[in-house]
Amino acid sequence: MPDFAYAPAPETVPVEISPRNGLFIGGQFVAPKSSKYRVTTNPATEQPLAEVAEANAKDVDLAVASARKALKPWAKMKASERAKILFRIARRIQERARELAVLETLDSGKPIKESRDDDVPLVAHHFFHHAGWCDKLAYAFPGATLEPVGVCGQVIPWNFPLLMAAWKIAPALACGNTVVLKPAETTPLTALRLAEIFAECELPPGVVNIITGGPDAGKALVAHGGLDKVAFTGSTEVGKAIAATLAGTGRKLTLELGGKSPHIIFADAAIDQAIEGVVSGIWFNQGEVCCAGSRLFVEERILGTFIERLKSRMQTLRVGDPMDKNTDVGAINSKEQLERIQHYINLGASEGATRFECSTPLPSKGYFCRPCLFTDVQPSHTIAREEIFGPVLSVMSFRTPEEAIQRANNTNYGLSAGVWTEKGAKALEMASRLKAGVVWLNTFNRFDPSAPFGGYRESGFGREGGRQGLRAYLKVDGR
Ligand code: NAD
Image 1 (cartoon, rainbow, N blue to C red):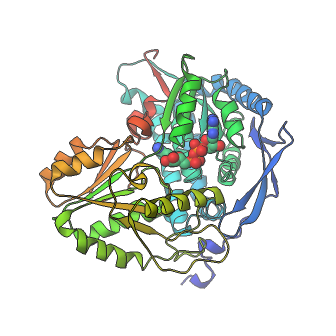
Image 2 (cartoon, helix red, strand yellow):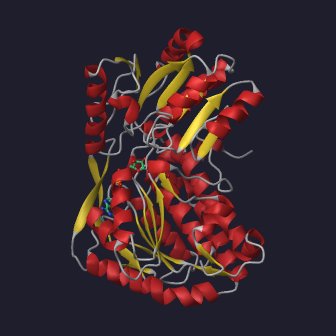
Image 3 (cartoon, rainbow, N blue to C red):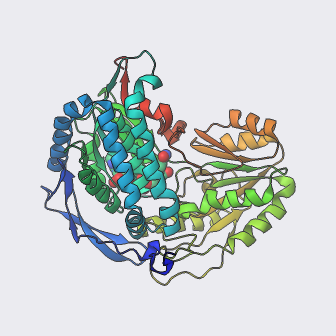
């Protein structure tokens, strides 16, 4: 019988982090032309983890030139050969999964059980899924002439660093494009580890280039004339600026932006499951989730009991060391984000809503925030309208399905929605009338590479995942 005592728990896997990290250009790690580095820290301890290169416009030039040079051979490679490389990458991600999960948690503050059980498996799944598409694209778009779009500039946020990299890179490569990706400045380490995996798996040099840096590096990348497409995930504010930069250039653009998603609970729902859905909807990943169910609408006749049960469930949430596998809510990603969340919490109270927060103790160091909910919320309150991107839930009520739909759709966003009811006809009616890219029925925060994800209105445009996600990385009949 194997000796399980020696099987290391994921949080004890030692991960080597090189003290100084360059840019990944042309298949190699190189020093930045800027000669500048930025420190990335562990938000749970406030300790520095490593120095990471800060790309400037010259570095962006080199990365885009490298992607351009790699484009033709990659696009012309036999599709089944491209598939083999993507399958190899997917398998290597699985082999290095524990290391990736630990690194993700150290750099982002998310609980290890989420990086280990949710994020990293999904990252591998994205590469497997898209590897399978490489030689089957003609079946996705029957009768059409297909070509890759070309060189893609991709900019991603810090909440799901590795997963967002996979969402962007895997479909781009499957369709024969090459990439320059910029991770967020607070969470660059796992994208650089992914670069190592690309090199190990003999992805041809230049097919993926990873440049690190802050908003200036992002601005230089999206404005670069050598790109054929830009894909951005991040805030609505930056997404609007990027749309303005690209207007009139003829370059393709997809935007995955913010949200203020409604989560609707009918009185006939399976209440125990709905409570768990709400917990996952707003406290998964500290609420730093673009599609978080941050506006909860509960049918009025069960409001009192539902909230009491939700509060007692909140009291069981463990907030603290993200490396502890029992932790439910880890550290907020940065001091700035913690301050932003606290600003909204103060605003909620000053605008007249009633706050309840779980009473768990917080670590003395690190950027932590107790999960909280607000009742007595009016639709006009700031906490009911603006994206907080933290563990803060705004609770409202409704009497009829019609009222639920009107209140849920009363937002500038349209990313996701959740509905809990045992009545199939009601669920389908709600799904067809909610203005959201994804509507979850009797579940929340479920992701699969075969299902398209994306928004309406200020949540952006374009889809990632599924056949629709491939469309964004292909010219179909020349368009
Ligand atoms: P952000 O917009 O500040 O930053 C996102 C990325 O853009 C970072 O890499 C950043 O360096 C870069 N950047 C910043 N300014 C830029 C500019 N002017 N030009 C080009 N790049 C620039 O967002 P954030 O704080 O990192 O992430 C949180 C936001 O992302 C939230 O609003 C959230 O809803 C959204 N988000 C959306 C999705 C989705 O799929 N719709 C997924 C995750 C996060």
